Image (cartoon, rainbow over all chains, first blue to last red; front, side, top):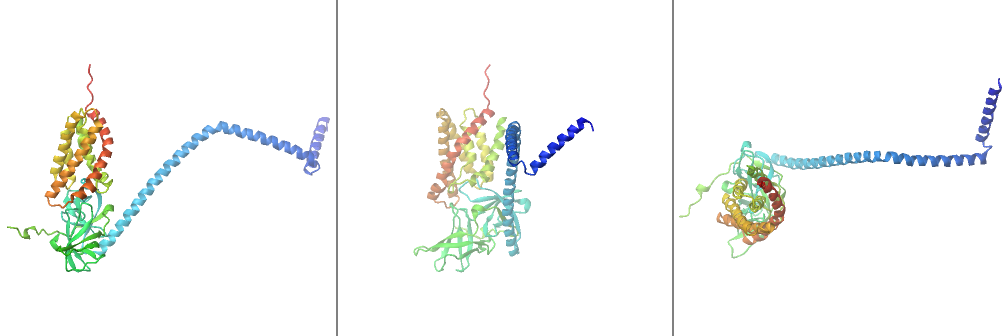
Length: 277
Length: 166
């Protein structure tokens, strides 16, 4: 063994011995101080390095974060749009399910579903426009209903659309039957959108809550379609008839999908009406 | 030639009137978008085709509405007439002219609608018509008249570009 390798061996033994003593806890105070200095130094260097790293890499992160933020915002918008669309579909499905139930419970009529696509441009009139027309065998005079009750009747038809006169229109009149009172009357619309009953005989006792159905008289509507309920009654002794205000079964402000009764043909009784001399 | 834009523009206006504007109602009244467009167009200084535009508006609105054609023909033509008179007299304050035309035009249209429907046998209580339809519609027409006037002024610059003097 030459002197060089002997020297190396001695150094290794000394260092190894010191390490063994240190690990064995023989240099407690000295090693603690050393390790404290070492840790502090390492901490100082590491924190400075981190600060420097942040400084160097931060702009890149901001760009990446902005990009990610934009992507997430776009995703949120897309999901919100999907959510709105789904909610619309759920609403539409609920309405259609109710209409299907209604058509099943009234099998004597055949129906054609139509969406409401507009209203009359004039505020004086209460008409809606639906997306079914003569191409779908819709004809003038056909009654229009929802699962809640009578809506109106077809007033004008073109190939792919039709105009419906609502029963709330001021020019509308429907012959009705009061179920509980067992009597007939006439239902009128008004410019305010309210509907009221007139021509109720003074001898008949009508109560609030009485159900109003179409009577079928006059041939304009089929019989037994629900219209609404009596709310208040006005009886004046000096008048020939009683009047009543009516709560309609249909919410006319929220009409979205309606059913057209396609197997009903209105009867025009105008030629049978007496002509005044 | 650029006046052809009247057809798609007024067609769109009637569609919007039927589907959107009629849903934005105050009590029972709502704005009349074709009328606003006709009035704003007729008030533009360079415009020479106001009568033609009124005829197109009558065509589209009369086709969509159940109101008799005559109401729109007399109403819209009358509004153009009022606008042309005011345009010559109140030319220095265009918005004032617009408000005046909309005010008189709305009253004129509603009076006409009321008269024709009453003649046809529809029972319309005048107090209900005035308070629930005409006054709210008047307010909404006034509100909508400012943006419509601005849009129509810009459109008139496009349809009738200024002549360059050399």
